[in-house]
Length: 551
Image (cartoon, rainbow, N blue to C red; front, side, top):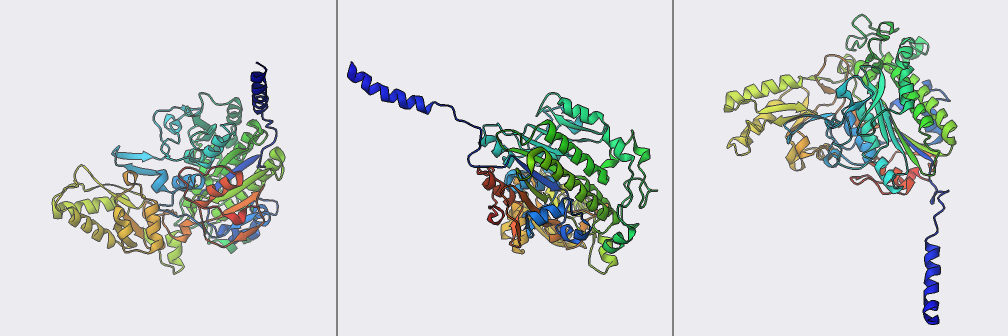
């Protein structure tokens, strides 16, 4: 019996030692208390340096550039360069061919209808006036985000929250397992969410909405912040016929008066710098009320500034409005950094700043300065002309059913796979489209790998191709040409550097001071954050760690 006791006691001693609770008061290895991802919707890389002298020393851009790390040659590696794809790529390290977000909208060949990137008809909106605005979730995104991986690594003890004016700018970055995502409902001026995340708004969000900040911000109106001479150095005339008039046909230039919108029209705020102010205030409220960066585990906050996109579309890169917006955005970013220093502590957080895409110059601006540019026909016109031609030549009605994302989609109901003239019809569609002024290349997407095409364009088209959510024919415009959805303003979506060359700044915990001109990609961001946090990269990630950034 004594022999048995002698054999058992050592086992009991070892087992007891193994069962002692882990003292989780300090992370091993060391990590930042908070990671903040900032996406500037529609920011060109050159805005960092073009407007550098206008930025404040205590603003955001100079603090990040002079005290952090800048990747000055960062590109979007796929087509099309649109908002939903970009936000998804930044946080997943993946491309549309894998993550499935092939545009803001796409023609879904399985559902046989247009699908919005973050739509989810199985959920309900919380806090909004427009029921459609709240029926949103990340379910259409097929991979994890870096926020999901952080949550997984801590057994869901970390918090991940996304905010933006645009639903897709809040939802897709925060990932599937996010604690919350909040976006703006332009029907009532509130930040809202959906039942995907919660059943009622937190009290602090309700209190934030009850402040009616939009009405207060409208009272500020919009006039230039700097002396007039600054704008003449960086932009063309204040009033141009090719600029849109988002505040009404009679408001053609500075100053803009918003008094008529107070208490009535909550959508106009989107196309003002005050939209960025609203976003910053919401970010600060999240930091305080959710106590981000105050716990044992690293938290993640994703912030997307959407108003830059609305203003950019309406006025273009060489407008007084765009110059003034970035001067004011710089101040907002400074306020965000101040809030992070106060709430989390300087040196305790890591922040990166990038864009979901950049933007083209207004074509008419290019032409008046003797640079090639123009607008191709509207998608609806293009479909009508092609369908008419194919019906006359081959007797098939409505061969095309959609034109989205610089792509044409076949109508499966009328254009069958076994059609004996199928290849002749496809070749004719390509021929018709190729002859349009402003079109450089047209090819069948599923055969992109075998198409005679520049290798960069080919790779980006392949990276963007997800068969059931992409079109069948890809159109590549000539440089400076836009799809003619409007006669004013500008847009994005192409492979060209003006649409795909984006900023990428790093700052804070674990980040070196410096810069690189080595070519890097949007897909590398999530991989680098994963390396910083020493966690698994997202499950569709194809990016590589930017090792120069990390200490």
